[in-house]
Image (cartoon, rainbow, N blue to C red):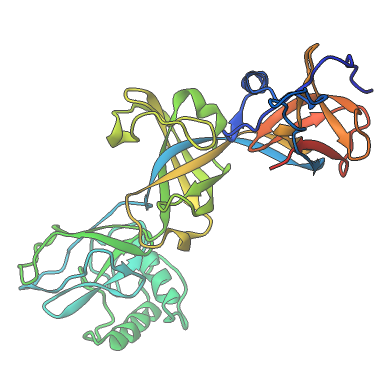
Length: 384
């Protein structure tokens, strides 16, 4: 159906909405608050104004989303402490902060002998040798030897066998260590995976103390930690995709939520996410004293993080989505004097107003539906 209008009754066209997230009720207020009268006959006299220039934009079928944006910081997953178990006279090599160490590589040195990083959840607590009581730490050692290429004839087992001793000996020979076929306490140290050194406790040359912390570390996997207001917690869950704006303020990269804390905490201002600010997507971050929940985001393109650490970022969370809907520019909406909205379909069909119902507002587009409205048609918009 087409919208009726009286010949002498002016129509008012909606102006562009600047904010990316606009609720329908707010949009209506903006439309009526920024009227653009349809051109009529020019008035006589020097004050006459010519017809406003117009253009045409296509009706498109697309997906629309609106987002809420919260502030966060870019960091690294995990938090580990490497404890020394090797006796000796002095630390002869220590890693620099920021160094990434992987399986089989040296974490540090005691008396010139490297302490190698192996992967596993169980810390080293005893020397391993043929005849030792079976245990999961022996199986953990076997998995690492196999991963490092010393698995010929070796099966993962809780028992330290002759094949285990042979594999250990080959590994020791390649590392320049005394070939004993046994693993003395302190020759290796375990972490769940690769580590990125964040701090070193002893000084070079200091005497090693068994059981003392040598270094702290994280994983080398970048993550984003953010705070979401409790009132918006329902918008996000583990597995949801989000968009992260990096510290330069313009580059974006995709991420996925890996965890949402079940425990709320009170924000404390700038140190805990800063004061509430209007986000580009229309949402706001937590304000001082506002209860929030923690959010962890894994970057789908980790290289995008570069070498940033503890740098501020913004996380865009989808708050509403409409898939495969018809949409037109917000500026195409015509506010009818009797209430509601319409779009003028053309060109070449001047005066054909099609009444529409509006749905989701997203960026500069708005979801619309109306009789006879189809993708590919063109609607009148103010000319830039």
